[in-house]
Figure 1 (cartoon, rainbow, N blue to C red):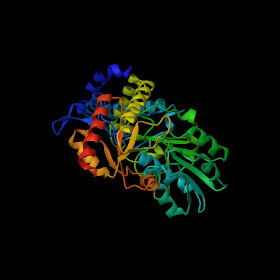
Figure 2 (cartoon, rainbow, N blue to C red):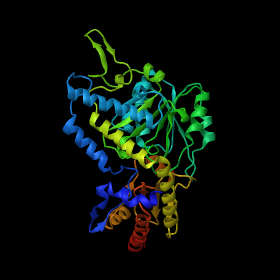
Figure 3 (cartoon, rainbow, N blue to C red):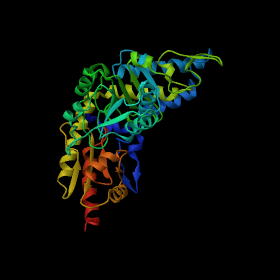
Length: 407
């Protein structure tokens, strides 16, 4: 379906018409951030022009309008991931802040020697917050290894649980390998031990349907800018029973009920975790982005991107000396690779001169690089607005660069 509509869809993303060094842009860095459709940009602009006022604090018309849009956005996010209640949706700056919120707040309930399980394929934002907690409270971090094909070792995972395990925090889809982890099964295992699970869904929510009730997860985080929304906005879903137990993450305005010099009482969830003026315009624009995605259809997006990723895998696999990292069945719309002894930065820089935008480096996942014994990789990541012609340009560009640089 999207094959026939791709040109119409691309018209909604003006930046895709950009020329780079006199060549048409092939934007293949969607795992880092996605481009924004006109409706999202216009939603931000229009709110600043027509409904801009601080939320929850004013009785005047503009404040009421802005508050209504913010709370409608909360309902929209809850609906998008099928959360039981919009009160279980906390607006954050993105996945990184959401993970930090859980690590800092839920982490205050942990004691020295308590254990948190993460995996070897995590983004740094799902490693460093737990390391900071370890340094503050003396918790123990346990790591699930993965095999060279990019599959987590589930037997090793099951063996990590003890009577001191207090949390599992796991990525849904690897931003480097594209591995779609079996989080529903992993959650079932954790719950059999009475352990809650946080899912980093930054790389899954934009690509296929994610249902927190079906997964039965306890927390789930995603970023607006990866799902065609603005930067600086994201969401954390949390079970109300857990959120109510957790202390505030930050203090200030909005999250208080009463303040005296002797004692402060806090608002109910979700406001207890939303100190200060929120990004209410960003939240509204995020809701518009989610509407746009639903209009296209997540099932259509998943099908199209799957076919595009298979096509890219076939094209790139045919290139001599090209090595793809992560070859799991049904992988996400990401291909990370190296060609012979060509440095990833050299490859990425020369592809850019051909108008092809890819990512180079460790992709905030240095432990994956360590696993494979490399310094970095080149990553191409795809969206429903990408085309087979752009994949062809990537393959031809890699071949051209390889001829220039290989010894």
